[in-house]
Each structure stands twice: as structure tokens, then as C-alpha cells.
Amino acid sequence: MDRRRGLSARLRLTLSYAGFLAVAGALLLAVVWGFLLRYVPDNPQGLLGVSPNRWLLVRTFFPAAAVAMACLLVFGLVGGWFLAGRMLAPLSQIRDAARRAGDGSLSHRIRMKGRQDEFRELSDAFDSMLQKLESHVDEQRRFAANASHELRTPLAISRTLLDVARKDPTRDREELVARLQAVNTRAIDLTEALLLLSRGDTGAFTRENVDLSLLAEEAAETLLPLAEQRRITLGVTGGAARTSGSSELLLRMVTNLVQNAVVHNVPAGGTVTVHTETVHTGTDGAGTDGATSVLRVENTGPALPPDLVPTLTEPFRRGADRVRTDEHAGVGLGLAIVHSVVRAHDGSLDLDPRPTGGLLVTVRLPGVP
Image (cartoon, rainbow, N blue to C red; front, side, top):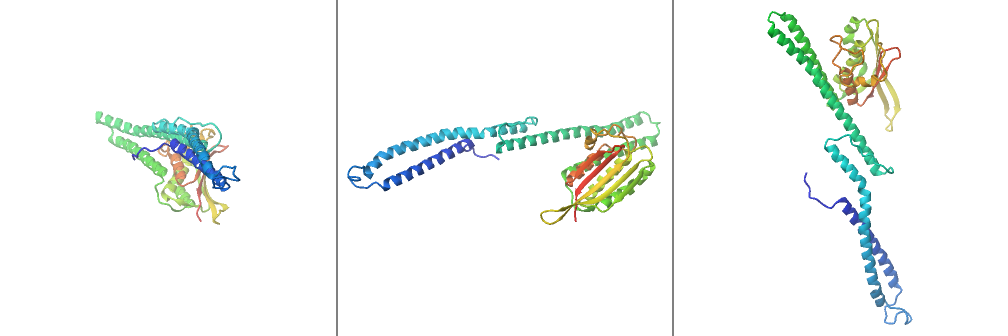
């Protein structure tokens, strides 16, 4: 919105300093003048005929007072302009950094030096904001590039199959339709995963009371055939763990964790354990019993390097052995969706590699009574 240009902050501060100094000087002169005239008689001879009278003092004191007030005003303007410039200098650095950020340069940092004051705190907060923005923009760029690459692959495969079918009419059409259906299904799964990830990031959902233990049982029941096919023991333990959120998103979160634990396991004889519980954290200031709902998914599997584990929640990131081996391997967004859902529900997600191999995933969500 366009506004009329007014006085600069430096000029307003200068006028404020000078005005304050002039008022203080005027009050001081008024007090001196009042006390001085109070003890001076108002007669032609003055005091005892030798002291000056009030009229003479007025003629003598008034010009000197006027000169003093003028000097105070000039001193206030010059000193105020200098002091205001010194005080507002850090704002100029922040302004320049904000303009550079507005032009698209997020790598610039102010890094203001000096003592820890309000301007230094503002500068540090602005640098922190720029760092988070730069990280978020880089993450979005990588995500867009990876998503484009992942979506382009099934489309390219579909086009190749159609070209082959057009050039070779004698090719087995049932096999072609089956391969096209598999490729199309994968593209749909990837698109739905991207939409779900976007929905979790925006937090646009209706909250309701959800029991994580029931969701864990439902996810385990759904994935039990897959676990039996891979000869993996799947078990659910623990008790109720109630939280507030979207039952659909939380179910997808639990399902992704269990499926991830089943798929990325040992070839045979592995285990997957899903545990839910409520951890009481005492009472808060309002006297309400605080609680945290905890979900743990632990599995056996190959050993994971500790420096690789924190990157598993990034979109399209897979571990060294996490490659697509079958239709259950996913699209590389399983843990990214989990992280997005947990973050949208104000929770925390911890990934810890097990010493004997496998992964321990712990989800903590705010509990409800």
C-alpha cells in the first residue's frame, strides 16, 4: 500500500532529542529565574539602595538566557542527529539484508558484532530466519527435482511400452496391459503420496481423539500377509495411547512405519515389534495431568551407518540396501510422510539404529486425557 513519505526515523529522533533538551533547559532557567526574582525587591533603589532591582535583572538576564537556549537547541539538533545515526546504524544493516533477501539472495548473513543488545538480538533472529528459509527453499527445490524425476520414470516407461505395441502389433497384449497397469499403479501411488505429504505439511485436517494402539493393531492386521510372506514375525504390544489428530493421517503414519519395518528386514526369520504406551509427565501449572503418547516400531535388519539414519526422513532418500525389490518397496516417501505427519501433530520422531541391525523408530505425540 502506497503511503505519503514522512519524516525519517533519524530526523524524528533528532527533533525528539533536541526538543527534550530545550524543554529541560527552559525548565531549569525558569526555576533559576523564579528563585532569583523571589528575593529581589521590586523598587527603584533595590535592596538597601545598593543591590539591583528586579527590572535591571530582567534586562540583564533575559538576553543571556535567550543565548543559552539557542545554544542548547543547536547542540541538541547536532548531537541528536549524530546520536540517532549511531543508534540506527544497525537497522541499516538489517534493512540491506532484508532487501537482498527480497531479491532472492538468502545466503547473506548480517552477523552483527558488538554487545548483546536489542539490535543484536534482532540481527541474530533475522539471521536465523534467513538460515531456515534458505534450508527450506533448498529442500523444496530438491523435492521438486526428485518428484519430477520419479514421476517422469513411469511416464517414460508407459510411452516406451506404447511405442513398442504400436510398432509390433503381434506382441502379447495381455503382458503389455499388465505392465502398463503396474506402471500406472506406481504413478498413482507416487502422486497420492505426494498429495498426502503436502497435506501433512499444511496441517489442514480436522482433529479428533485417536488411540494409537487401535491404529497399530489395524496396520498390523493389514500387513500381516506381507509379513507372513516374508517369514517375519509381527507383534503388537502395549496399551492405549490417545492423542488428538487426524485418524487418517495417523493411520497412514503407523502403516508406513510397520511396512517399512517389514520390507527392510532380514530375508527370513526377522521380527517387527510395535509398542504403544502413555507416559505421564506430571501436572502442569493449571493442575492438568500431562501425558505423552508413545509409539515404537522396532525391527531386525541390516546394520545402518549412524550418519545415514538422520537422512532417511528426507523425500526419496533410501539407505544403502534400500532399493526397490518388489511392489511393496514404496516410492521413497514413507518416512518423509511419517515425519510430516508427526510434525503436523506437534510431535517428535526419533530414529535410532540398533546395535545388532535394524532400526528403532519412536514417535511421541501430545496425549489427551
